[in-house]
Length: 79
Image (cartoon, rainbow, N blue to C red; front, side, top):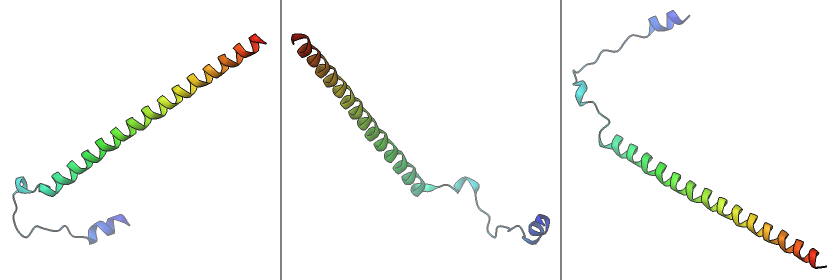
């Protein structure tokens, strides 16, 4: 079945000759690539900030829990 499909579609021939060295993505391709790079860098910086913030909050919560536990133990020892 595939053979019939490939046989039915002719290969197009170029009507005008072109220089393969001149076919480039151009300025639009450069701008799109640069935009993707900038967006990726901004997202990575934002993600790093958020991860640091979460880690710092977890460390502070752990310290506060340890201080509260120590305070409870000292209160129980005094009684």
